[in-house]
Amino acid sequence: MKKQILLVMILIISVSACKEQPKKEVVIDQNENFDIYKEEFLKGLWKQSPGWASYVGLHEYDSILNIDSEENKQKFLNSLKEMDSKLQTFELANLDDGNKIDYHLIENTLESGAWYVNEFKGHEWDASGYNITGRVWTIVNGDYADLETRLEILSALLAKVPAYYEKAIENLTRPTMEHLELGLNQNQGALSILGDNLLESISSSTLSDTKKETLIARVQASKEAVSNYISSLEKLKVELADGKAESPRIGKALFDKKYALENNSAYTAEEIYNNALKEKKKIHEQMIEISDSIWDNHLANVEKPTDKIVMVKMLIDKIAEKHVAREDFVDEIRRQMPILAAFVKEHDLLTQDPSKPLVVREMPVHMRGVSGASVSSPGPYEKGKDTYYNVTPLDDYSDEEAESFLREYNHYILQILNIHEGIPGHYTQLVYGNESPSIIKSILANGAMVEGWANYAELMMLEEGYNNSPEMWLMRSKWHLRSVTNTILDYSYHVLNLQKEEAMQLMIAEAFQEKTEAEEKWVRVTLSSAQLSSYFTGFSEIYELREEMKALKGDSFDLKEFHEQFLSYGNSPVKYIRELMLK
Image 1 (cartoon, helix red, strand yellow):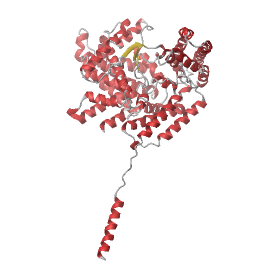
Image 2 (image 1 turned 180 degrees about the vertical axis):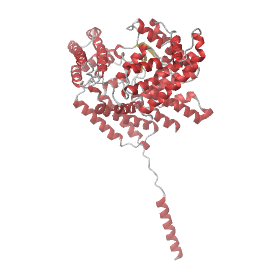
Image 3 (image 1 turned 60 degrees about the vertical axis):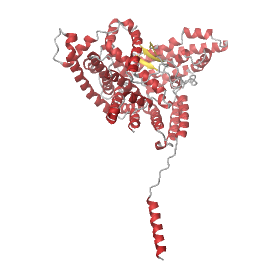
């Protein structure tokens, strides 16, 4: 009997113990299914955004031109909802680190797509959003297929151009004057691309006479559609003169959301704005210290002003007199690229790929009007193509404008610009980005990370000894102050109602910019929103991560290892890269 009672007690204790044991979570590996989902997501994305597909090197959608109709908007929104429903079936815990970032990027893209249609509504006020120039230029100048194949693709695209511009005119119910101007200027490029050179190519091709006639007729119809669109914009300019046009200021609610979606940062728009104000003060202190120490090297016979900001301005103006000749501007940029590459190699800062050269070229006409320099990298579907450093030539500048521009991009700042746009800035980072195992990270690139890396590269190169002079550090501080000022301008214009006079004072007197640069930046802040904040946002996050890694690793910290590990995650938001690197 005692033995039976003892056995029952043991059994009860055993059962209770089993009940108290926590259940082990069964982790289901969803990575294979998620990879299938990503392929489906991309196919849907390309059908809705064929121009984006072309931009990243996928040309099977080049003949598609989506009309911005209400019916197509609804189809687009329905596709976003469907893809989001499927995305929600995946658990983050069941995905590997790389796919976790891809999940976040896709989630952000789906939310952005719906928000831009339902809330931002750029189709109602941004006349520059309607433009076939880039699409046509890619087909006409492409080398992804023979001429005849590309001409047939072009014919299919052009068939929809009249309806495309007709709907554009109908959609522009509340245009801004600033975007009317940009739309006018950029659409002029379409007329030149659809001009005599194209007609000669069609005539000399081996297309059948019937196909030639059809294509030529579509070219003429497209030119008429573009010309009619330009005329409509000119008419709107007259009708909306005297302050009747929509303001390009988007306001706090839209700006905060756009900043969050586009920059995908750990910071909010207001936080990065406040940080920029603090950074501006810090930079001023650094510039005053440098200027005090080298004043006599440049202005020994000039009395040093008591106003320290005026002193910095005077010294910068003097140093800026040293600049390249107007006619040598583009060639000087070409000359500096191998010098920068050699420095990176000598100091073992990054592994570079010499099989992917950087080609310096004049900015294509259809891309001009927003910035003076940019980089166009091959998409993930055409990794073997060249990367282009686009530079706007100074041909259309007056002598006064050219001199102002060259003083802004003087001997020192031109080198910083080349680090930023070229090596080891955008060009280097985008080469690494294209090598990412995840095509999602290349396609859904995070702008703050991309711009932040370029700004970080400038500081890093000087820290490692590139042209290590007080003058270079002074000008780098001026350049850094520009990205900080970009953030202040961006938020102040769209949220705080900054006026042009105040903006010019900020840029010229407090950020030491030339008038031409300041005028161009004013135009840019009226044409864009949240993008100008991406430079300082990304820089802040990357620099803070590096310092955190330094503190964590101590003497074992290796700069090259940090750079290559950071870039190995592709063009991802820094907040997600940080999680993985610290993990």
